[in-house]
Every structure is written in C-alpha cells, then in structure tokens.
Image (cartoon, rainbow, N blue to C red; front, top):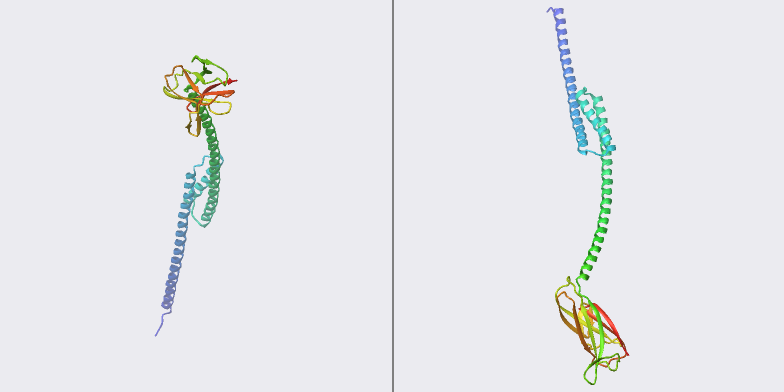
Length: 290
C-alpha cells in the first residue's frame, strides 16, 4: 500500500485547525459569557444604586427644611446625591465608577441621618420654646381671669349692697305708765316699762319690692335679750330677737315704730338696740338707764 504523504499532512493540518477552531470558539463563548455576566452584574448594581440615590433625593424633598443653617447643608447634600445619580446615566459603568458612587451613597446616607437628627433637635427646641410661651400665656391668662373675677365680685358686692334696704334714724326711748295712765319718758331703770324703738327704712329703687321680715334685738347690760321671743336660724347663724315686724316695702322711705316691753325688771346700764333684715344688721343705737 502506497501512502500519499502530502494528503496525510493536509489532513493532519486540517484536523489541527478544526480542533483549534473548536478550542477558540469554546474560549470565546466562555469569555463572552463571563463578559455578559459582568455586564449584567454592573447593570444590576447600577439599578440598585439609582434606586438608593433616588430614595435619598426624595427623602431630602420630604424634609423641606426651613431653617437657614440646615437648609444650606440640605441643598449641598441634595446636589451631591443628584450628581451621583446623573453620573450613573452619563458615565460608562465599570467597577471603579460603581465603587465611587457606592462610597458617595454611604456618605450621603450619613449626611442624611445627621441632617434629620439636627432637624429633629431643632423641632424639639422649637416645641419646648412654644411650650414655655404657652405656659407663660396660660399663667398670664389665669392672672387676668383672677383680676376679672375680683372685679366681678366687687361689682356684684356693690350691686348687692346697692339693692339692699337700710335703716336710718334709729332712736329708742324708755317710757313708764304714770298714775294718770299717761306714758311718760324716763331714764330710770326702776320705772322703765317699755322701750319704744323707731327707725326709717330708706328709699331704694334698686331694692326688691315685697314683704320684709325685720327683727329688733335689745341686749341688756347683763347680756340677756330683753323680751326674749325666741330664736330664728339663718343657715349657721342664730338670731335671738325682742320683736318681729313684717313690713310691705315699696322702694319708698317708711318710718316704723315698735313698743317692746320687758318681761323682767329693767336693770341699770347700757342697752344695745339693733335692727335686722333676716340675719343682716341694718343699723343700731343705744340707751342708758340709771
């Protein structure tokens, strides 16, 4: 058998070339796959960084700071975030660019936290200041209310006093019945039989019209009530009286007289006479018997 050396060499060379092509194709495919994988990774990281940067920018917009010192920091940080965001679109993405943007993102996050912390501290300070101002305002308002209440009480007291009846010209005389049956004035205790008390209810158009219960109390030198008719209670107050008079009051001056006997002998000394409307003392006078 005769072998053609030329043909054999050609076939060997062709086989080697085919193997080389297969190896080159496999290497190229592997290299392409690796490059595609790296490109996908870079694109994925780019999207993540864009999302994070966008969150930072949106967060800055939400803060909406009004404080001048914080606003300047806020604007600077926002511009850096926007620049980093724009660079991802404009620059060719590679590992170095991503690393730089990631570093910028970490800085912006720290800056964001600091600005938020400063902003919160300013808010707390402002709230505390407002609390102090509100407290001062409430204290001042309470003081003003207290003054108004005092003025109202004074006005009510004045109105109440202005609408009350008063007893004027209170006078008292002592009489005894002489042998002729005539009532004669005396200042002798051993002759005294009755005390005549007269007074004038003053005119007051502001006072309430109607029946008025008036009481006359005569307190002797022995501190006992002359002609004790008992006691009447007004709340926690107790009034022992010598005479009770029911008067129809019509806002005009009216003179009233009442004779008060004594169920016991009169003693020498000073007698205190008082006129009351219920528990309120209208006025009084005194007499002395020898």
